[in-house]
Image 1 (cartoon, rainbow, N blue to C red):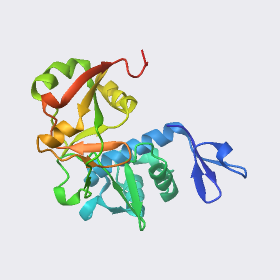
Image 2 (cartoon, helix red, strand yellow):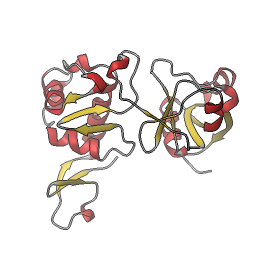
Image 3 (cartoon, rainbow, N blue to C red):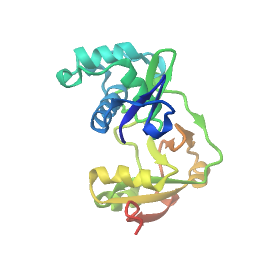
Length: 222
């Protein structure tokens, strides 16, 4: 993720998108750090920012800012955070991680089981997508091929329509591999495919026989 600029009342990722002079709002380093912090708080541990999620996972943006600036354990690193930064990161997130409505924000997906089910968004079942991808590390591949893909500490297994996104996810834990998943196979086995964002889909479990193939070197296109 790159820098974010203020363009009048809009936020943009490139000054060329702005007809007037664009003002820097947040640099790439701070953007990444704050995005990860927002995800952690909203997906896993709101109590670490002294906030409580409403039903559906919502929290007032002003309360999130206050929690980060006054309660988060490394609050001294985030005294610069304002509601404008939160909104800009949410609106421009490339994976649709966040949703904003009526002055509130929530994480759209990725919640761990420490978050109760009543705090999760409601997802719509998808009946059309055919091929999905899941990224993992190569040293975890053989157990997955034997046992399938399980959500472990999260409520759902996360899949994507973009192999590059899956590879990026897999690279966080080592040399990445991407598993191609047959969505119709999931449905035929009784597992609903839920749409979380334009590129992210959720399912409770991926059986081994719904994994079509293993793809390597996706990030390098080799």
